[in-house]
Image 1 (cartoon, protein in one colour):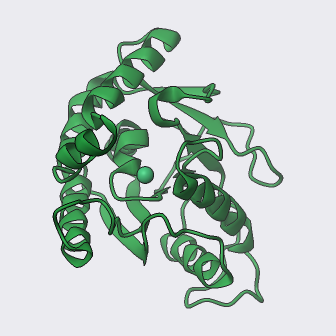
Image 2 (image 1 turned 180 degrees about the vertical axis):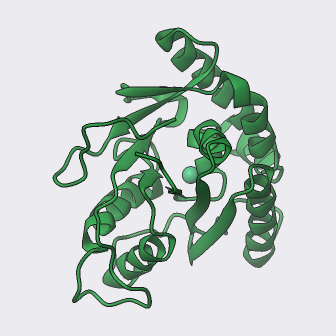
Length: 236
Ligand SMILES: [Zn+2]
């Protein structure tokens, strides 16, 4: 089956680039339309800047990263570290899925480290099915299919055993470039928790590559719930 549209949903600006930027670059090469979304606007991602300023900066960074592969970027505007599956926010995720009409959805795994990542995983998985409901009304019409959902790798691969691998060797420099657009996060995360998102991304890509016999790879799990499962491969 030809994948025409892909929706990748992260909790924060930068999560999608780190988790599946290479795979999205490959989807674009195959001619698919790619939409990158973040559930929160990342308002708490800076010590020095005000929350409003942080939101503005991170939106620009996300748009730049998306532009590198010719994808578009949408923020659902929730607050960082305040993601809960409320009815109102579930409706926002459902509307996002209906608007994009994806053949494939990629999101966090439910076992990742951040509460927002785990809640986003659950919200997206739930909403991908409810998006077909005629009586759950949002602005866009319901989907006539249930899109398969793939979970991207956890940060540094902790508590995540991939079921499918994507060879990103050809596009690892593009992925690097996408991650580098999130300039505001490098000093912030280093100071806060010693994280170096670029180095950590490369360590994981190399590890997943070694596991799958290529230089760099991204790992994925499948959301195994009826009727999301397919008999054929949808990842590049
Ligand atoms: Zn995150």
